[in-house]
Structures are given as structure tokens and as C-alpha cells.
Image (tube, rainbow, N blue to C red; front, side, top):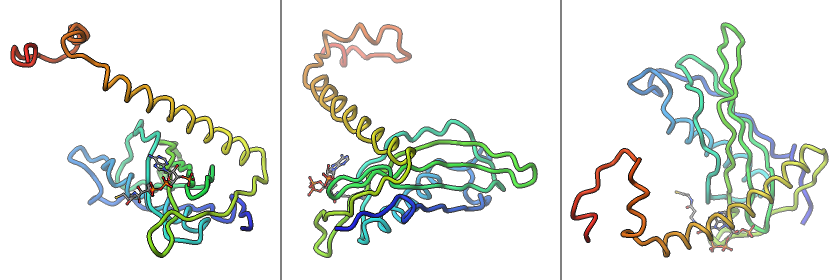
Length: 186
Ligand SMILES: CC(C)(COP(=O)(O)OP(=O)(O)OC[C@H]1O[C@@H](n2cnc3c(N)ncnc32)[C@H](O)[C@@H]1OP(=O)(O)O)[C@@H](O)C(=O)NCCC(=O)NCCS
């Protein structure tokens, strides 16, 4: 299978934030951004794979700055990593006020997409041609995040199986919750 460059599938979608995208506070709904991110991840990954793809997991979604109606939102997507059938698409979201030209980076997220064949089974994708230091750095960082995710998932599962309610109730002492008698004495 011939390798494809990062540039081959690099994709940008720019969309005007219209009033119907806003919540009651006048800011853009997080769900609208998620949907746009999923769309750009799909375009980028399917271009690299040359097949239909599905979204498998999403990392790093934090909405740190609000986006306003009337701003232009650009979603820049590129393949950061490829496995056998999976691809990690890095997405950088930039909101721009066209009147002032001021741009703000609202978040960077990572979508894992898997290529599917005509029977709906995961299928091999082309290797990634790392042409620049930036491409190589992103590929390496994706491997690191994948390792961290595996470690974290293992620890999380262990915690779930290990956690005994009675032994851990003290952890709720400074939390903003009220534990009923029934919950304390199951
Ligand atoms: C994810 C899915 C493709 C895995 O299928 P599977 O038959 O278990 O296949 P595999 O175990 O071979 O996994 C395929 C790839 O997905 C990756 N994968 C599976 N689960 C993953 C997860 N939670 N996070 C990241 N990657 C994951 C595997 O590492 C593998 O990657 P690789 O081929 O590059 O090594 C399958 O569960 C699926 O189709 N899920 C539904 C996806 C969907 O509909 N998304 C839209 C959401 S509404």
C-alpha cells in the first residue's frame, strides 16, 4: 500500500456562526462545535483512507473560550497518526472576529477514526509519509497519548473493581454533595 502525505488529506472547514447555533446565553452550543469537528475529522480521515470511516473515540475536548454568533470558525484537521485501520485526526479550532481580525484558538482535539470496508469491517489504511519535523512530532505525540490512554484505562478499570463504598465515603467529606442514610448503609 502506498504511503500518503499529511498534506494529501489536510482539510479546513470554515463556517459562519449563525443565531440558530446559539444557546440561551447567546454563545455557540458545544454540540454544534462537536458536530463540525466530527465532520472535518470524517473528511480528513476518509480522504487518507480512501474508504468510509467511523468515529471511535474523541480526546481533548475542552471548550475554554466562548464563541460568539457572527464569528467565523475554522477547523483545521490533519492526520497525526495511523495504525492498521485507525487514524488519529488532530483538529485545531480557531474563531475569528472578521471586523477586528482577532483570532482565538478555542481548542485542539483528537478524533480516532477507523476505516471500514464494504462489509463494514475495519480495513487497512495507507501508511503516513512524514515529510516534516512537525508531522513526525505529531505522530510521536499520538503514540504517547495512546500509551497514556491504555495505562489510564487499565487503572480506571482496576479502581472501579476495587472501590468499596464504605471505605471511601470519607472522600466525599469536602465535596458539594449530601449522601443519604440509605446510600451510606446499603
Ligand atoms: C470501533 C470498531 C471499528 C472496532 O471494531 P473491532 O471489530 O473491534 O475492530 P478492532 O479491534 O480490529 O479495532 C479496529 C481499530 O480500532 C481501534 N480501536 C478500537 N477501540 C478503540 C478505542 N476505544 N479507542 C481508540 N481506538 C480504538 C483499534 O485499536 C484498531 O486500530 P488498528 O487497526 O489501527 O490497530 C467498532 O466497534 C465500531 O464500528 N464501532 C462503532 C463506531 C461508530 O459507529 N461510530 C459512530 C458513533 S455514533
